[in-house]
Image (tube, rainbow, N blue to C red; front, top):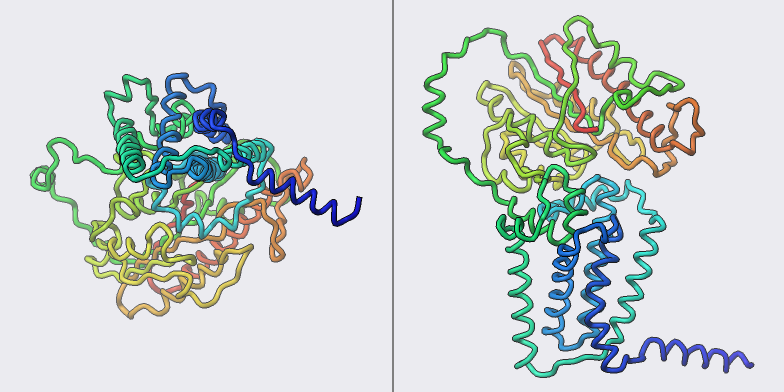
Length: 481
């Protein structure tokens, strides 16, 4: 066969595959089957959907049907409606599966407000798909392909507009019904916000997502009012006045800093945090174990608890106060320090928009806020500014403060941010776990080496302030494990 004939035959095969149309009856069958099949494949990205109670499986089909029906009403073509709907749900499910891998919990309604922060740190994660992800993605692509060849249409606005409006109304009704405690109890929705990953497995993605939406608004406790708080305050004994002076206060919240030995014994070729451990029990030092409300992410919540004194225990699980609740001047440590005559500075060597810090920090009372664009120099470890460089920024802020004015400096680092599997030309792990091949535990050794670098930075920080003339309190802790 000649090359030209072979090319023509190949083109005919491709054309027939791309432009074939299903007969009317198979098209109707496809229109009925594709939404639930999409449901099962999207759920399969992160769990076995057949372990979900059958009644909740069927309820879980509804958003898939309603999305397709809404688009069908808008365009009048089932091929477009099913293909777009399936594509949309596929993208959401794929994103959700990676969020679970990286963070340990699924997408929550308030995560929509975190998109900019997530995108800004995405380059540090490994997105290599596993076998399950690949299989689900390929099967969903097949569904999209079949969807695009489903030949069903409705013509005329008299049919399309009511279809679209009815679908939109039913979708809104579905979303609101999932937020009703009575309906949730009736259909057996599992609700335990502390364990969102398990909740999503029990209920399915969309019922769980909409159920959590009711936590976007925090209810005022019964009997709570400012007058009631002041009446309670008036009954308290007078606080004892002290004359301890106004020392400078330097707070370093170190990204992902923790002692992994709390998880179990392992041996390394060198000590991971020798200086930190030398401080334990030393003179003029208070040490202990800090507990945070988060694991593996959402640093802003540790900041919120430390700076405001409020607890995440009174807020919906998975919420981000910086994005959801702080939208005006708020009582916080920086504001209190200003009342005591302190100058306050916030330092973070990363993007200002992360967790809305550029908006929130002034609301908390910080007078000066410095982000990556304000910090013109710095040594990088991997693709993050090093903790030692953050120390230099702290020293600059201290040395440039007004004479006679105490300073409150709050620094949040980025050096140790995940992920840890990516290799960089400017970084090679030198802390090794004994008994393993290096390639087996590259991520662990990357993390441990970063912690060793932080330990060196902490030594630099303490040594500097031990030589200054003014009294200075240094507070150092990790934001999460």
